[in-house]
Image (cartoon, rainbow, N blue to C red):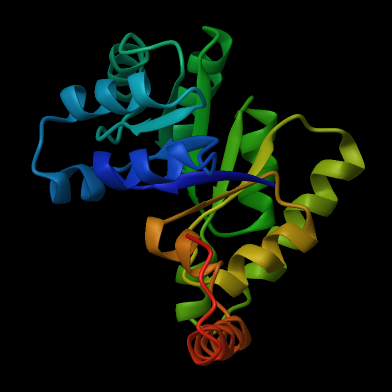
Length: 217
């Protein structure tokens, strides 16, 4: 499973990228706003930093305006994936932009039916939001599983990009289901390394080494 970093913070992306943990990046207007920087400037910097797809989201709501914004975003770099919402206008924009040869990430997906429409419209990625479904007492992971089954049944090339990841458990469950990509904030990716038994075992090793005055250098 590929890891995309859901962030517009250059330092955080750089740290993970240097460890080989970054296969791409996803951004949105909220993340750009948190960075406090110009959307085109920060997006270009991220594209220069990573080799994989960088999702940059349109802010228009009507298809023609989405297409215009998407084409402008796509000029930033060759690895831009234009991000459009899963609305009827978003699907229209997806079809045009994908026919132009651009990668398209259809976001704010909450059902298998929506994902099926996105695949038919030529989406490169579909982004189902796990956490937001869980917030409504719905099973976000079940939606990921349903989409995976449908795409496999009919040989769609659209990649399942699990989004709204809230925990390390979400990451492992998505990997077991067969999501192509999971996008998560840096702190969630780093939390995957944590385990209470690792901490307990390391503490014991350190104490034993100190008692025995063991030194390597």
